[in-house]
Length: 315
Ligand code: AN0
Ligand code: CP
Image (cartoon, rainbow, N blue to C red; front, side, top):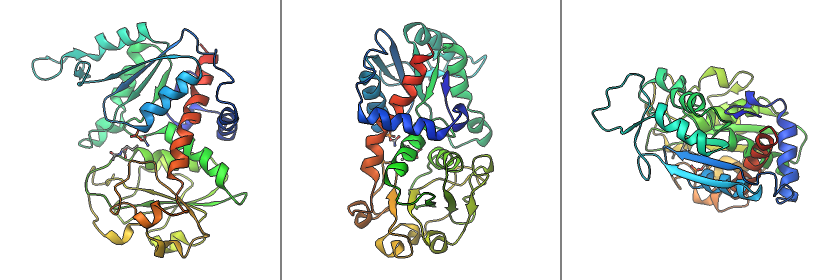
């Protein structure tokens, strides 16, 4: 595998999920595979899970890991071709990325969208510049539009906890106080349609996701109806895509509570974290046996390890 940016970069979701589950059984089985190999992680935005789980995965494979936080412990990067750099950015990606490529065998980057221009964000300009100028295998740590490591961990978690062969999976929008990226929801959708599940997305009108990621999903605007018979409920906020980056709905009834769970098939509830308690998701769900959030976070390690293993085998 040369790049992991989307479900499209893998042939078979089931095979990769099985590989992650095998690694979970014996995390040190390939502890020499990454010997003398270096993973470089670049964070343009904050992270707890992605940072630590990817580091841990790399260490389990015997790799060295170097992490930089752009504009914090390294320079503020410029991505515009031909920019006259007389304001805040200090180093151009054309200069910085080859340096990273020189030091590292695999590069991981987190680059959130600005949520100001749909055109800029959907072009994945920053991600593509890193891929182009580092010339190294690339692993997305969440791009402007997708978060594949999260979705792989979520797929692993659903396989582990499913009580039926073809579960009903519902992605539900939740309230939030800020403009939040679409990446986790887009990515969950594109992975869900590639799995053997019945997949429903529910959100208020105006929150339709980019249709390129939701082909094959059923959209149901009535949350209660969508939740009927659900085996898994994936909770996530995202800002409007049509009215790009805007908050259109503040209705707290969209926040999942135990009352919402009555219509479900004793569903397990998922969220990628970080979660705003009692805004996106109630304490009573997060602290109940319904919640799978810690299982998802745990599986981030084995998801990252399965991807890094495939990249190392291909170096
Ligand atoms: C980010 C997002 O929703 O894309 C990261 C989630 C993993 N969350 C926030 O910005 C709160
Ligand atoms: N779920 C997730 O990616 O968490 P972080 O933003 O903490 O990495």
